[in-house]
Length: 158
Figure 1 (cartoon, rainbow, N blue to C red):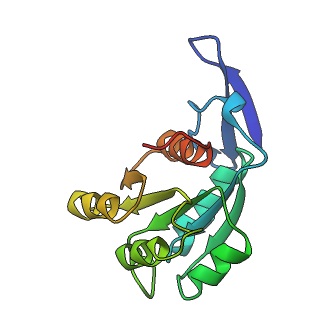
Figure 2: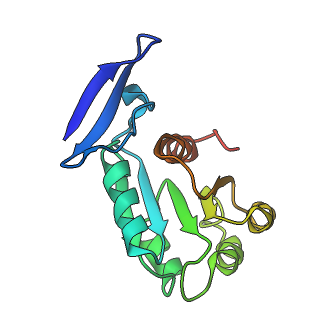
C-alpha cells in the first residue's frame, strides 16, 4: 500500500507501507515517477532482488529481475532496459566481468549501469570499467530510488 504526505518543502512524497510498518522510502518525490522507465536488475541475492523489485515498481519502473548473469547479453538485447542495476556478486561471472562483457556490445554499452558493491575499491574499478553510477552498500532506499531514476533519464549521467 502506498501513502502520501507533504514534506517540509511542501512537496508531495510517497511511502510504501507493509504489515510491519513503513519501509521509509519517503523522500523521493512522487512527481519523479515515470511509467515508461525499465530497469534490468541482476543480483544473486534473492531477498535483495525481491526488495529492489517491490520498491522500484512502487515508483512506476518496470522491472526485469535476474538472479544470475548466465545469458545476460541475450536477455538485455531481447528487452533493452532504460538502465541496469548490477550487483558485484552476480553469479556466475561477477559484476566486473559483466561490465567488460557489456562494453563489447555497441548497443549494450550505451545502457547506463548502476553498480552495487560493499567495497569502495571495487566500486572505483567498476566506474573505470564502464559503470555510470555507484551504490556503496549499505545504502538507503531513497538513495536507491533517486539513483535509478537518474540513470533512467536520458542525459543525466553521473
